Length: 89
Image (cartoon, rainbow, N blue to C red; front, side, top):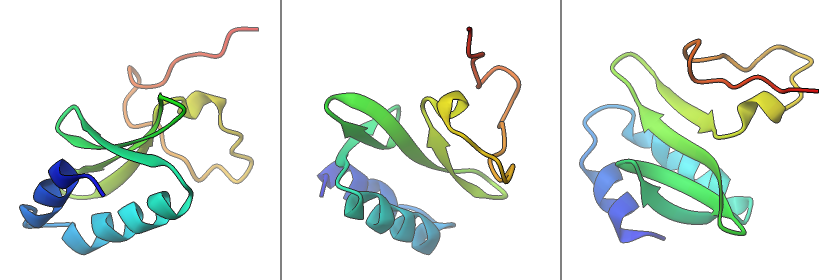
């Protein structure tokens, strides 16, 4: 476990238990824990895969290449129009 992530989580006033649980789930997938852009970041083979992030009214799991994920149930939400890139054929 990354000490920067430990400090980040211990300093949270809101969403601490939710983000701690997300951390456990992500680490259980075998991803490597890092701390980038002031938030927990999880990588595989040196590639950024997912971040966990707290906001005022919600917490989120952010996929770095979310546009590449299949989402037939439409459960993923595009945070802002500038966050998601287009997949070109």
